Image 1 (cartoon, helix red, strand yellow):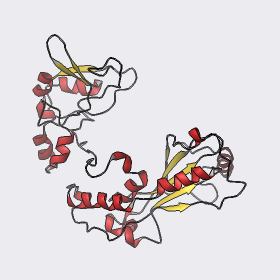
Image 2 (cartoon, rainbow, N blue to C red):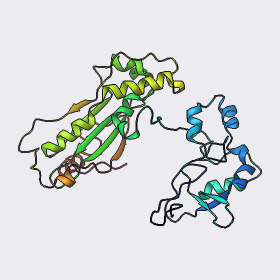
Image 3 (tube, rainbow, N blue to C red):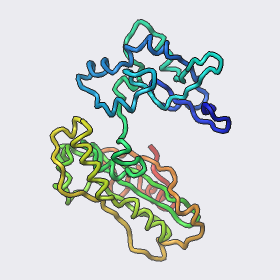
Image 4 (cartoon, helix red, strand yellow):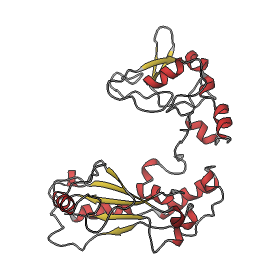
Length: 308
């Protein structure tokens, strides 16, 4: 869709109700302010607080506030169009949310609506920019971790750096459910970063740098969660005295795992990541997360990742 006020810019439409991008051939519906206000009971902050028996943080409310529609949990990223002759403003909505709004018999919000328990928000930029919050930082900050995390990176000459995230089921009674347990599990770290296969020296350096945690930023984020965020999981958490680090696993450089740099423009970039959720009995030393030893060896030779 064309960006309003710009003839040279286009963007994917975002739904006003669920804050999701409307992909592909799905019909993009338009709703005006009157239509939204007619169904405001589905999206009101008061209704959200009442149903979930809580008080949304003022900063979180601000992140889901649309000008002219205050008091409702809506997406400020929704695509907006203004009629040049009448001045009427319309917002984009997806098929499911649009149909739910038309249902006058129920006050329940649409399944994926922000007001249906998805008022998640983000860390305010005054605390940290989104680009400063890494995957490893998110894994270490998670107050409840049903999974251990393994971040594996592979690359090589003429190849961009690719990440592969594996999640392994954990016993919550062992790992603990709050941030204070970080310092008690040094013998059994929850976050590993693995450098595997052939990589150039610069690529290894980039992965190590990406895996390192900025202590000041990490502690700043911890402080915000504990003292300001209002997140119930951090309500009784005491600020840790020090910050844990992911464990980086790699072999010493040799002719079998090191490539010469050939195309820095490609080799120094990070490509999209793939994700794998292993069952509670995977992996094992013979087959990894694969069904057979043959598939495991073939994967290592071809540098292919397991599929979900």
